[in-house]
View 1 (cartoon, protein in one colour):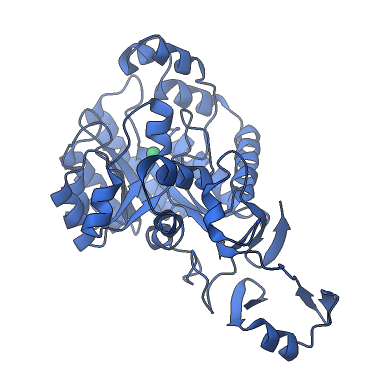
View 2 (cartoon, rainbow, N blue to C red; view 1 turned 120 degrees about the horizontal axis):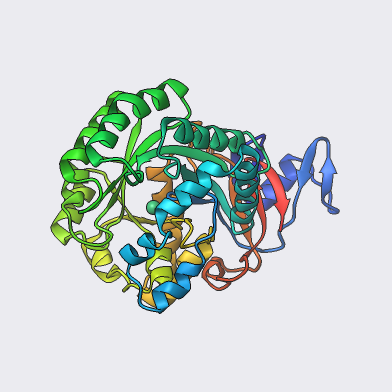
Length: 387
Ligand SMILES: [Zn+2]
């Protein structure tokens, strides 16, 4: 088969011989008459991967927490000793725009090398109007870089309550100051809330997402990471785009989510990094509930490799490799649509020309190089990039 790409769009998918004839392609390949010809010599091609959940932009270093957890310190004890999310918030606020941009640039290069062509990027380590807007602005600048994956920026002011502020006061700030400022800025495409017992409860999450929807934003949620807090049911009733983590979401809530077109987003990097149990993936398959897989890149889980996530699911959780590929392409694209409105995460005529060329003849290889890249090249919005 051959794929014809014009600018950033898949124009035609046809038998190779008829394409060679139609475009009068000579045997030696190369560029002829403005057409670049790549003979992939039988290598497999899969869609560009879509990372539907990342905390891309932050600064600081929480690596001592790896040791502290092994030494038995709880999350609360680590936070009391100056670690935890508040330390990331302090370091992020203190970092310059250029520092955050540079880190984001390097991270996105790494994501591209492992096949990610589109990536959701949350704010949420600023937690003030000024700093949340700044993170979204830096995401926007990164999105302008044509050599990097395109971004879906998400406002996540409701990631945590900043130190020194009551939840009530911060809720007021989110609803009356941050959200209007984010809407006015016009960069964020979605809003996300950390809906979990002890963080933002169901009523608070409901209010934040209701107002976000009214402000024209898509809706996303973090639900049931530590306990079943009813986030799955709320996600279903609000018909959000995706409800992620979902480890403790009961099956009836997962079914309700699926019935209301809410994607379940699994983030296998989190249990991998934190030493928690794996989600029960067989029950999702048995019930026919679609799900996506994303990296949840954050200070505790510093990988942007979707092939690693697929490998964890296939080699540790009994997931079929085609299911894993579906979860990082078509399903992820459903909750994270391309800004152009055209299909991505799939190989179709009229779709965005985002493709990965596997370094071998079989697509199943995508799960077999968790520490490197299974791809020898990526086509990013029509541009051929060798790895
Ligand atoms: Zn997250």
